[in-house]
Length: 232
Image (cartoon, rainbow, N blue to C red; front, side, top):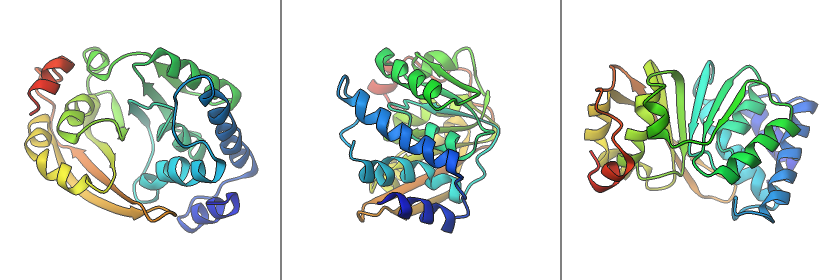
């Protein structure tokens, strides 16, 4: 996807990017390529691929959902989807949870170079952070982190009642949703809708939108070893 296509496609979805925001996306892509030479951030570094498979992909949930308030991004890696969403919606408050310290260092550099306000990068695992910050966020996102029956226990305890968990999945998203029904219900959410999109290269994206309808039971999340060994 060329830059002009990226801007035009966002415009078609109701998202107008000004010159400052476009520069931020370009600077972000340059930082991603530069830092990827020093550490493993992503296999995708060519500008046009980054625009499609990282930036546009990260923005997909915003085209059909209200992205506002305080968003927590679990296992953000190189900053997806939270940093593109922050660039597109500057008033959004962002907390990024990333267990690898070197990636947090990269995210801090992105935050500083792009002059992003109200972005908090935390070097901590989601299950540990949730023990101190339960039900604190309007939206919790996770993109390509883990299978949904594991991922849901890491994310849903962080979501406020009446808030949303956005699970960003590939082509297996519908099957994962089926397999995770019990976990989702136990943790206090319901599936509100399934959104299917296609990227420029024809690859499928399944975004699952879950609404938190009741508090997560106090025993969750468990330690990660228990979650992985015995998913809900």
